[in-house]
Image 1 (spheres, rainbow, N blue to C red):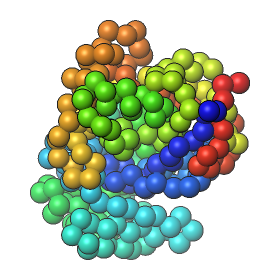
Image 2: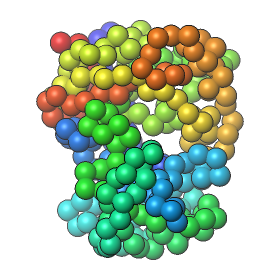
Image 3: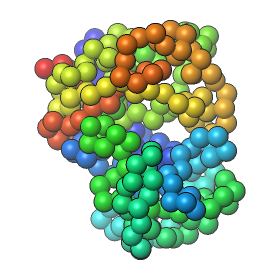
Image 4: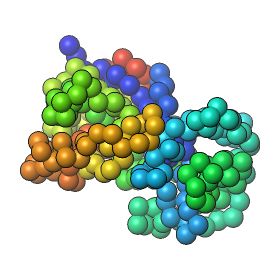
Length: 257
């Protein structure tokens, strides 16, 4: 079986539920429409979906780029929707580093604040909110790697959404994607160059359907991948820069060039 794209995931608002799509334009700054916004607290610090913020993963976002309209569906079925307003400029703290953004006030601020019980504000950066910038514009994970982790955990399967990856790849051996670092990889009409391993954090222990902790993925990764020489500890999947932008569809071929 040749390697193929098995899923494509994105979210218009970092930390909200991942949305599965059939195709995406992969650009140098990431997947078009992905992480166009993120959330900050009262101190202008990035808010992730960890700990008590886990319920953010139960909120589904949809962004209409042409109309500049953002909508969110809350877990109780309530929907908030409005045209995006770009407000005051501010310097946010994004993974410990300053990142300029503009406030994007709307009905979502109150709705999300109520959901997790603390003040949140939506902000819009100039070029999206990839954790590793353009070096990490895309991320890839083999489906066989998920099966390997499930075996270590003693469960039938591990939901890929826990790892919040851009692309799933089927038809390769478990962790074969690790060998792609530094090489050019064709994915659909695009070409990426993987830059390093993605070290995992507590988010992966949470059920993406509920935001509640239910699986000790970190202990499992430490048990069978903790001693590997990798770019980040507890590695699972890889991040990549985009060398040649292009369209990527479900079922497209993936090949090392």
